[in-house]
Length: 458
Ligand code: SF4
Image 1: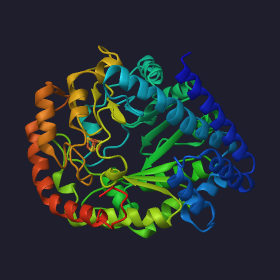
Image 2: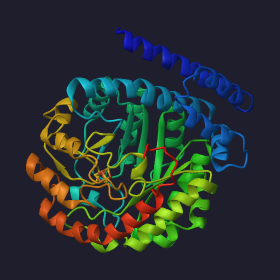
Image 3: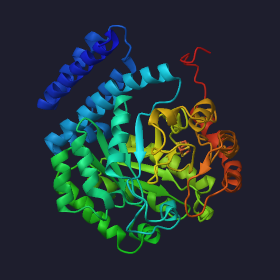
């Protein structure tokens, strides 16, 4: 074992111990733990984080404090402990250090998380969803899924997400995979309609699986896109999970049709009351020949989301992210293995769930080989695709970038039913990108005005 690895393991062990101590009596032990961190952070390396955390724990009415406390009151003890260990220690500490080593050694991106589709089958047929276009016959074998996780953990990736299709069509294999890799954290983007008592009991047994349930606003908006009765099924699934003290979140796609509903305070309150601990917001993407570009929100609608999610983040006890408007926290696009990538049910390794082009497949390449191939390397070279992180995407806001990457790398369309030429995708995104630019620049300049604080050394 190298000296570096030994230091990392000692650090991980210390954090594990601290987490166990914290878990015993959080009220009493959080302040003690803070004192301990203060003492050891002599160079003030973590001063900002320490101050932010202290502000949260000193105010019991703070929304982050309420969210944190709810993890002890609402979540099963063993599930919470497993999450802390898998997410904080394995995914971030041990995994982060290993990813860094592989990155340096191989000169390519190594992802923090892998999103994969166990199946392209789905029990619903949502408007504008690309999953239907993949057809409903593609499945990865259990062995392929298992091999992805084994290869990934060797390079430090401990976070695995499932999409589809509807991943819970393969719920037995998913639970089997969670049991086989107890040191990894798993999450599925699911329509929620296949969650029942038995599955919730399986989740309690494996402890390392979490669903992100798709909801599009209230009943009318959800059922408009996902089909009648879906909203009621989602509420039922959330009730089962809440009763069993299982953590879950919501995955919300905003479109030109549902912005008012999905950005409302009533909607966020409904998610909080239903027991959701996180709500992730996604912008509708015009992917595929059958996409519905009219569902893309206009600049005013996107601006509503920008302000509302920021407001909720300061007031509501739920962890919200708007993936298209929060690029400033990740310094732009996270795809192409920089933080994550996507593997579809055919085994094609794609930069992102929304980018259906590939030059590698798990049946022919190892993950590491795929990371070093032209498509992912072109992503790495291009990132960030814009210095304004409200325009992060090489497809949506900088469509010329994706066109150039696909053409240069020779990547092919992975849409089996109706392959989409990148020029076609470009022509759908270009007008959107042009329309959004002024508003994006205005919002960016507003939030990055110089206050003369000298933080940037100007
Ligand atoms: S490719 Fe676009 S949608 Fe995917 S992570 Fe990057 S910015 Fe987001």
